[in-house]
Structures are given as C-alpha cells and as structure tokens.
Amino acid sequence: MKKIIIILIITTFVLIINQPEYLKSAPNNIPVLVNLPQTVTIHAGAPFSYEVSAYDVDGHVLIYYLRDPPAGVLIDSNKGLISWINPLVGTYNIIVGVTDTHSPVVLSTLTLIVKIPPHFLNAPIHLYASTRVPFVFKIEVTDGSSTQFKYYLKNGAPSRMEINRTTGIITWEKPIVGNYLIAISVEDGVYPVESYMFLRVIDPGISLPKITHSTSNIQGINVSMVKIPSNTNLVPRLILGKNSVKGREDFKSIMSRTKAVAGINGAFFNAYGTPPDPDEPRGTLIKEGKLLHASHKQTTIGFTYDGKCLMDRIYFTIKGGVNGSFEWPSQWFVNSLNHSPSAPNSSGIYIYTPEWGTNLGFSYSNNVVVSRGKVAKKL
Image 1 (tube, rainbow, N blue to C red):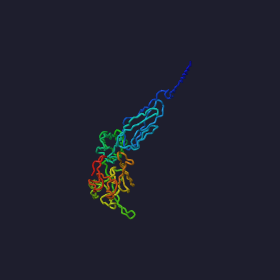
Image 2 (cartoon, rainbow, N blue to C red):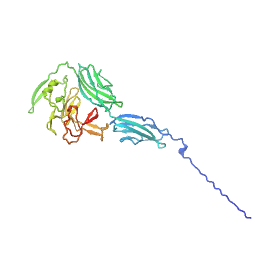
Image 3 (cartoon, rainbow, N blue to C red):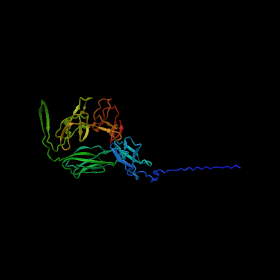
Image 4 (cartoon, rainbow, N blue to C red):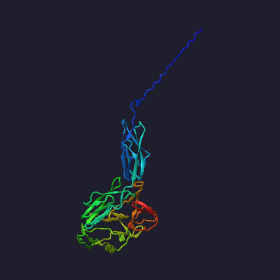
C-alpha cells in the first residue's frame, strides 16, 4: 500500500502600516481673521490702506491674498496690508483670504464704499465786513448727493464767531476790525475736508484817507498815477463791465454805480487774439477768490486779504475726473475758462460760469450744463 504524503505549506503575510508623524500630533487649527470690518466708506481719489490681522494658534506662517479684486486693489501676502492708490466711485465686495497651507483657506468679505468727497462751492473766498453790521455768510458744499454735512470753524476764527453745524451759516454779531484767515471744515461721515475764508473787517466811521492823483513822464511815456495809502478802510474790488466777463461799460459809469473813490483799468481786451474778440478780456481775472477768466500767462496784479499788493505771473491748471478720480486715466484738463474756443473744430474742454452770461454765443460741439457738481442737462 502506497502512502500519500501531503505537505501543506502556509505562508503568512504581515502588512505593516506606519502612521505618519503629522497624524500622531494634535489636529491642525485653522487661522482666524480678527479685525476685518464688514463695511468701510472712503473718498474717491484718496489713497486707501488697511492692514488685515489674523492669528494661527499653531504658529504657522500665514499667507494673505485677494480673490478677484477690483483693478488697482492689492494686498501684501506677508503683512496683509490692503492698498488702493486711486479708488473709484462705487461699492465693492472685496474677498480676503488667509491660509496657513495646512488647512482650508479662510475667507471673509470687506464691503468698500467709495464716494465723492465734499466740494466747496463758495470757498476759498475773500470777504469784507463792517463793524456796524452783523456778519452772515453761508458755506455751500456738495458731493453730488443728498449727504447731510456737519460744519466746523477751525484755526483763525475770531472770538464769538459761530457756525451752525447743520446749515453751514456763519454768524458774527459784532465784527471787530482786523484781517482774518479762517479755516472751515466739513464732514460727511468719512473724514473732514477743509477750505478757507479770508475776511477783512473795516470801520466805516473812520474818515477816508487822502487820495492823490498825478502824472509823470517815465522814459518818454506819460503815466497817470493814483496814490492810495495802505492799511486803510479802502477795499480793492474787481468790477466787471455790466457785471459780465464780456461786458463793455464806460469807466465813468462803473465808478458811479459802485460809488468807488478811485479806480483803474485792470485788464486788456482780446483785440489781437485768435480769434480776435474785442468784447473778451485778455489775462487772468479773480474776484473774491473765484477765478473768472484765464487764458494767457500774463502779469497779474492782486491784493491779499490783509491789504498787500502783489504782481506776478499766474500759472494755473484746472482738471477734473471721472468717478471721483483725478488721476490718469480718469482725469481731464480744461483748456480755458470763460473764453471762446480758438476755432469751431478745435478739441478741448471749455468751462463757462454765470459771469459769462446766459448765452454761450456759439452752438457747435457738445455742450452740457453742470449744477452742484452734476450734469443737469445737455444743450
């Protein structure tokens, strides 16, 4: 009988799984944003910056970033500093993220409201007051919306001068002789904007100084001179012919209706300009702090709020912007103020104020009416 030998071979497989080191430690904690506000309101054109703060209990290095931010909005990935050099008007939801590279990204939203800053309509301004009459003046401000402003008097305001914080009306019951440079502040809930008022107070009871008239021949030219003592009650004023930049009025008529004690021809007509227009002035005209005409860089005579006389060339730039931005590519420049375009087909921007008159005098190009900082209608 044969014997059958069965050999059973059993092989044992041992599967060893090692646990990674990071699973042996405590679970990772996600970063926490601690100071990101829900909504921030700022002014257009004013650089904005805000430093986001976050912490990580595990001590990991944090990395900050923005998800699909508006053009121009940046963040420092290491410090969390958000910056925008030239904010444009609008409302933006800026998504801010932070990560420690060990856990999911933590996101939060910052709503940024960019609005047009307040604009003074009648300041800076040069005003005069009398010791015999209470001084009253209303500050006009707009931002193109229905914002309720708050008004304040800052440096230079004399004692007992007050301003209504709601209406902007400045009152001074008993003005005192002197020259005052007064800072005015307006707040719209974002941050203040300032301008100035130049105020000179005179006493009409003081007798007028002696004014002399003489002629002299200077290098073969006969010069007529009027000598007026300085630091007197006399107030220098710019008077327009027929109260218009283009107005022509007899010199004697101007002296009579303004009851002036002395006067000089203060400007030239644009008789030889391009195009020639004998009714338009040539040079710079500024009345009580308001620029009325500017087209040529000629010597200008001026009087400061404290009575000093200055003569110099004035170089000016008038620029505006789109959506509250006054930087490239949103900015635009004005070619001239209260002066006819050089030619019907010329390109540029020309501004006309009420001192120009009720009629432009031409009908070509695109013409719009702007009131209180907003386009009111197209002509």
